[in-house]
Amino acid sequence: MDKQQVLDLVSRQLDAGIVSKEEILWLVGERMVPAARTPVGTSLAPQEVSGRNLTHTFYTIGTIIAIVGVGILVVQNWNDIGFAGRILVTLGLALVTYVAALTARRPEQSRLADVLFVISACLAPIGIFVLLDEGGVTFSSGAQALSGLILAVIFGTAYFTSRRNVTIMLTAIFASWAYYAGIVKVFDITPYDAADTFKWATMLLGIAYVLIGYGYRLQRDAVPNFFYGFGTLEILGAGISFGGTFDIFYIALIFAAFYGSVYLKSRMMLGLGAIFLIAHIIKLTSKYFVDSIGWPVALIAIGFVIIGIGYFTVYLNKKFVSVA
Image (cartoon, rainbow, N blue to C red; front, side):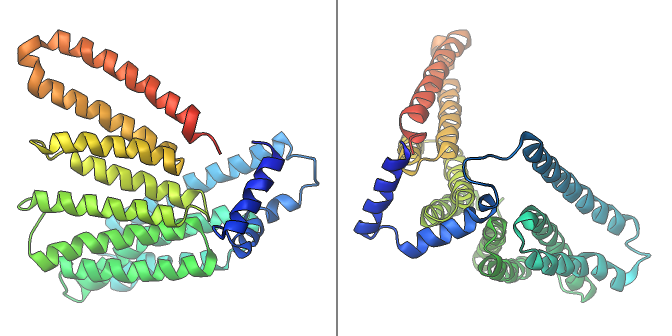
């Protein structure tokens, strides 16, 4: 699709009311401001691109080391640092990194802001646990549900303030935590004594994730991809564990994922659909056909089926998913 076709497509979407002028202006302002500093017709030098990638790598490594360091510090000195010290290195540091991330607004600070938000999100639940433990409050399912809900609100607020991709993802993670803890609290069950309930709950959450991703499809690439991926993983991951007559319905779910990947242009959904289709075929073959046709013959059949799935997946990706 060349530039003129893209412009014609955007014009038609505007006329149809599918896309608003405000959304396009927001998209241009969000994504094109950093690029505006580069003269038209030029591209970033390889050294500059390499430098940015190296900086991002150091940010990632630094995040991991910092989180591990805090964990080791707390574990090794749990009794020595006292309550004030525990709160300082958990909730205190979580608050500092959260505020610092909100104030990092310049384009070159975007990755740093993401890192700070992740550190804050990792430390905040630990700090809440420390606070409740010191107060003699058991970190029960009710306390976890409330904690997850509070953190979801906090990082949801950060999303509306900073518009960082990572904040909406962290909000979803904390909301999911509150969702599962709430199920345990309300129904007074555990994943061990009500496995099917949690499987259905997981599939329902997966559907919600996919719908949220669809709602964000026009705004940011990373957000819908995150929700499409985790939603598909939850739906197919929980569904494959049912067995019985659900195995037949599960095949329909997998092909729904293939259709969804084409409709939503999601490589993540396409790849997960292929992986779970392979896993389901292996499951069915080992369960129903090994005794009748023998394990070696079953392996040969599975091998050729997987080759076919691989070709089918590549074909779908090239023909439909990769097309803008």
